[in-house]
Length: 340
Image 1 (cartoon, rainbow, N blue to C red):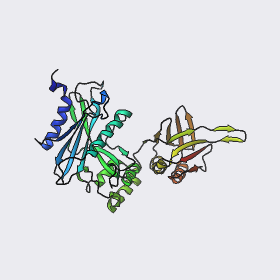
Image 2: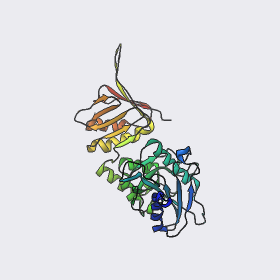
Image 3: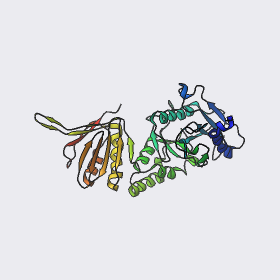
């Protein structure tokens, strides 16, 4: 097989970028040691193009989430993980080289996907637990994922590839996405963030009255679209019999997640929707029910909440250590533990 045929997936991505940037030669950064041979970087390469509209920025695209060479997966419809990431970053007019931190961030996204098997989809978000550019004085501490506005999905010899753009967001914007929905929030912000260009120096759009009002209306109208959360500090202790009685079952939750879970419950249970949380050892599903109660199985707990118990738990879940007891909920408490 010829070298050209072997690189069919790679060539398809470059052709898609050339439709936007013509003959521009991008800044390309390849991987010295392939990931399969023990290298640290799972992506084969990253290219950065100089974009001028709507204002100067770098337009990054990855090579490696999809199948760049021979077809290896069993899914004929999808190439590899089915996507490549893009990232638009505001650029100074005199800036000639793309910043290394942005490419490190994209490689970190590759490490996350390759190690966990979790793929990104249109409308996803990810808490970075700190500045997306380490050491920078920026309020952007999380990421959202949306279809790149200039790159439609590709049909390649190895299957379809979607271009998902990574967008830097603030903590309060992340909270708005969690309690409402990502695409609704990004749509409201697009006037202030054309083409979803990430600018490390910007303030939160939740400070713009029109944005905050639109988010509040959306939350009240739609509830939360977040139906699934991965929570690293999630645990379950079954009830235990003691000499002097019985210790109630305990749902253990990290303080960092407690506040947002409380808000999500209001936007899910009260709208007739469930909320699923997965931790290292257990899956916990909150679901609406006529009567509060819980059922525990192997590695899974299902907790039913009526309107009153959902409202009470939503109010009491705060980001601080403590034990929560619910008025009409017998045999179970919620233990909030310190997040490190």
